[in-house]
Amino acid sequence: DVKVTQSSRYLVKRTGEKVFLECVQDMDHENMFWYRQDPGLGLRLIYFSYDVKMKEKGDIPEGYSVSREKKERFSLILESASTNQTSMYLCASRFPQTGGRYGYTFGSGTRLTVV
Amino acid sequence: AQKVTQAQTEISVVEKEDVTLDCVYETRDTTYYLFWYKQPPSGELVFLIRRNSFDEQNEISGRYSWNFQKSTSSFNFTITASQVVDSAVYFCALSGGSGSARQLTFGSGTQLTVLP
Image 1: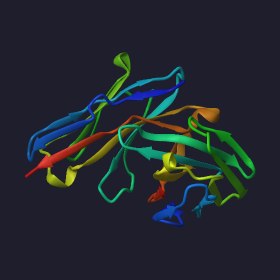
Image 2: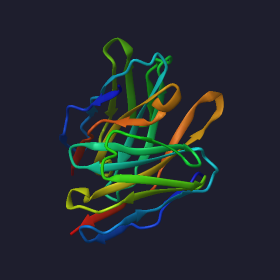
Image 3: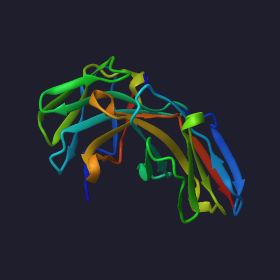
Image 4: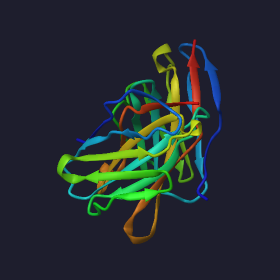
């Protein structure tokens, strides 16, 4: 099975700190995604990457950056954490299937609290 | 731009009742994929189904069934004889057919509570 691992389940950080959220997939997938989940808003795309060092902004990139130095690792960076970035963060990887189809697998999420 | 609307924020039913979760989508792609995910209280997203835009056959899997209607841009999900373990947040999602549009666009989710 495809596995996407997020290094932390829970994080508490202080306002102004630089925060790194790590995501690793073990199947050499090209496409990886970072989502933010908030009650009543569903999952919103922050950034995605379609190859090493390649990235594109999603719907809500403000206040975030990403890094993809190796194919298996996609990091989300909060340059200066703020309380409105308190949320659940989910990483996903897209993988090919037969017949030109594809699927997605998600990590278990990182619940970040900024105080 | 893609958009997914789940108008039902919360639904509460009594065990053994049938329940339908609505999903309406917007896309300009001619080829696209629709998904349903379940998120139990543990927080992990559990894949339930994927449907291709060129396949409008309805699908049944045990107590779950899906009704895809291109004419109304809807992809509704029905749980028959609901059980307490079905309590979760359910997300409908859409993915375009090519290029950078292949990211998943999610609806806001429907919180389903099944009461014993």
